[in-house]
Amino acid sequence: MDDAEQSASDRGTERKEHSGSDVISELIDVDDLLDVDPDQVKSSLRAMISFFTVIKMDAGAEDIEAFEKNTWTIPLIGVLVGLVAFITGAASWYLGFSNLATTVLILAAVLLFSKFLHFDGLVDFGDALVASGDRDKHIRALKDTNIGAGGIGVALIVTLAAVALLSSFGIWLLLLVWPLEILVKNAMVAAAAWGEPGDGMASKQVGNADKKTLVKSSVFSLVAVIVFMFISLALVQMVTGIPYMNTTMYRWVALVALTGIAASIATGIGMASWANKELGFVNGDILGATNEVSRVTVLALIIIVETLAGFF
Image (cartoon, rainbow, N blue to C red; front, top):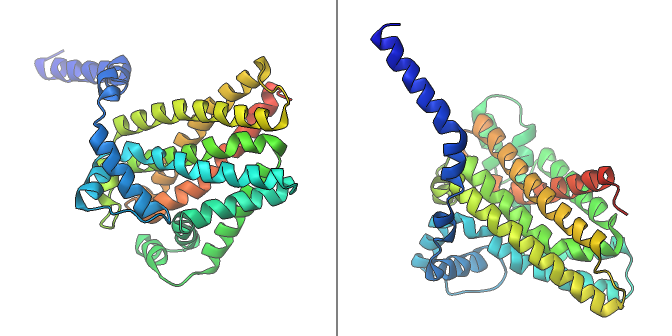
C-alpha cells in the first residue's frame, strides 16, 4: 500500500470512528443540554406566543431573534397549547359530551388558539404534494394563494384521521391531549433540523437548527410529556375519584412518552426529506404541515405499540 492509499485508509478509519460513539457523544453533550439562557428562553417564548397563538404579546426584534436562534424551545409553546386542549377536553367530558364530540371540541380549540396557522401550512403542503411535474411546479403549488383540491383533500384526511384516532382512546384522551401538543412541536424541530433553509420567514429557524437542536428539544419534550401526563392523570383521578395510579398506568405513560418521541422525530425527518427532495427547502408551510401530520402519526404509532404490548 503506497502513502496515498494509506492516507486515504487512515481518513476513512477516522471518519468511521467519528461516525460511531464519538458522534453520539457529541450530540448528547450534557453541558450543551444544560446550557440554557433563561432570558433567551423567555424572549423566545414571548415571540412564539405572539406568533403561534391568538394571545397578543409585545414581542420585539430581540424576541424574534431569540426564537430564531433557539429553535429547540418550540415544544414550550406546545405546553401552553396542550393546556388549552386539556381544559377544553376536561370541560367537555364533565358536561357529558361523547368522546367524539369531545375530540372535535379539543381539535377546534387547538386550531382556533393557534390561529389556524399550522393548518394553513397543511393545506399548502397538500397542494404541493399532489402537484405533478418538476420542482418549480411543486413550489408554485406550495406558494399559490388559491387552495386546490389537493390541499383540501389532504387537510380533510389528516383532520378526520386525528379525530378518529384520538376519540378511540375514550377517557384516556384526557391524558394524551396535553403531551400530544408537545410532541407535535418536537416534530417541527426535527423537520427544521433536517431541512434545508429557504428564503421565507422560517429560513433562520431552519438554518440555525441542527442535530444538537433536535436532541435538546427531544430531551425536554420527553421530560415534559411524562410530567404533564402525570399532572393530567392526577387531575382526572381527583375529579373521578377512581384510583388510576398503578403499575400498568406507569408503564403506559412510559410507552406513550418513548413511542411519541420516536414518532415525532421520524415524522419530522420524513417531512423534511420530502421537502428537501421535491422543493429544495423546508419553509414555514412545511413546518406547519409537520405539526398537523405528526398528530396523526404519533397517535397511530401509540395505538399500534399499545396493541402489540397488550395494554388494556
